[in-house]
Figure 1 (cartoon, rainbow, N blue to C red):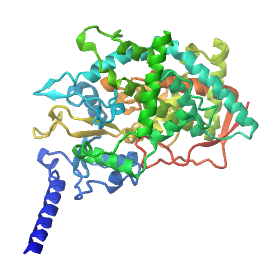
Figure 2 (figure 1 turned 30 degrees about the vertical axis):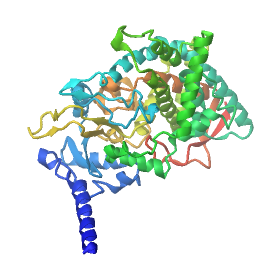
Figure 3 (figure 1 turned 90 degrees about the horizontal axis):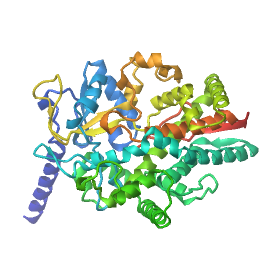
Length: 515
């Protein structure tokens, strides 16, 4: 009898789990939204769920399937979680801008109590109660309004000297390496350079990554992006079963990384306040916020929780580091394999620097062809394969059946890489061609067919800083050096499947020589 009861209980548990994991299978069918039939427990793609393929390629398959069948949207499943893939650039504009109030959040996991570094501008949510935005939900909006002044053209100009100083150190590093043969892993070199820049501008410290191969800042920077099995499992759970993620004691941020960045931020703030140091950088604005010397509106509702300030410096590091270092190193790889384009960029750099007398903030604004090369690089290698969003209020899909209402909490993906590789907008999309971004060619295609920094109210706040950092380093390298393929080069570049940001496999090994 006891054995029967145990068996019956086991069967009941299995059936309950099966029911739970398949209970969302009719989500899109009930709403008259085209979708891919899910496999129980797996969803629409085992490759996507288990990170066996880079997610950008998986989403590209879904995007192409939808376009081939004339669908603006396609419903898919990650495990049991329904996800709407947006496959029409006009609808992309609608969701990111016109109907932003319905689809406000990135939907990424954060826990300000257990993992305070996750409570950053990228992750903070709009929280509604009875269709009214709550005080906590306004937090991201207040925070963005206060941080935005850091990234105006005037502030970029005042911070340029910090970036230029790091570029001078990069020049000395490259010159020494050329003397040793000049074969370099440029992904690592530009990662060190970006670490020095962000360390200086976001944390107010000299990271010394180019001088010291064992610099603590660079070591922690590597750990941020390491994805071991446990962390990969935590990320998968956060994406497919977010409620379960909140009860599991698996940190998304490595505890060593958390302690290092929090300690570095707090020690620097204390030192500046004690010694009245002003550097006109990101830390200065955060100190003003900490002391309620508002850079925006005054008033009690303008206060920001002081405990989340280190998280804002941390996300500056994450976003600035990965976007800039990866884009610059992949751009150099493309220039190495397209020497005619490299020479055209060099001619522009020489002409502009002769006009301005060296690399200045103003000179960067005149390097239009270089900007086209960077834009083409970010088209082929966007920092994020897709823009994540979550519905924050029940949302009727425009122009669709009255049943096509997405309830709050529904995940939405805008497949950036797939749109960037759509031959409708970019003929021969695999080819590196900076002329795609001439003013004439940009006017010939929809604005929302290019999304390396996102768009709308949640567009990347640091895009000007990223462009300044990339253009400054490229100007110095192209002015003083030539880059060419190395026998160790991996080209065409392949994507790392498990990374949550776009990373290439095998690095970017290049040959560097003096001009």
